[in-house]
Image (cartoon, rainbow, N blue to C red):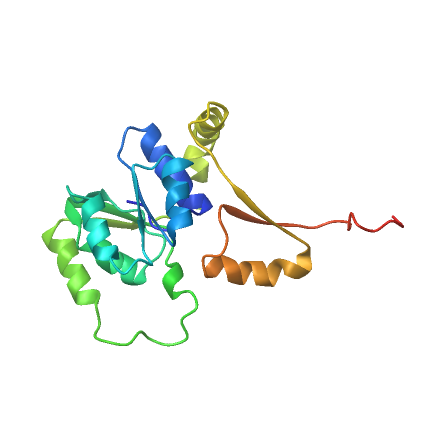
Length: 197
């Protein structure tokens, strides 16, 4: 299970899982992104977290529960996924985008005790996942593997290119609200529409 699966990290995670022989289910926001997951990236299933039937759709997509949850989001998505985790499930935590714009504590009761109870009773492994930690020991092998997978068409990627540094702040806001698809890039340089250059 991969959250924010239509983004550059999530889409790579799901495709690598498929290359390694796992069943990949992605969570994304909206039908277009869910279609992208199954038709372009080859995920086995996709679940729209914006759907009013998200919890039921998640259960239908994971009839045998979840063994690995690649966390990119936090919030209500994680609350639903945690209820589907199997005994000894693993959860690498790469991002928590649902809370990045928070300016105050969330409403309602503290959910941490319930989560920690699940960590204990299901013997879950939860670990922060910061890619730079793995550069010294895995970078070269990853470069070789990923280059081959891209060359062989086993891993695909999309780029969302925004022209002009002046558009970077709006592009970044869009990134945090789910407007971009693929790797967001800001192209800087000379304006190709100017005739006097």
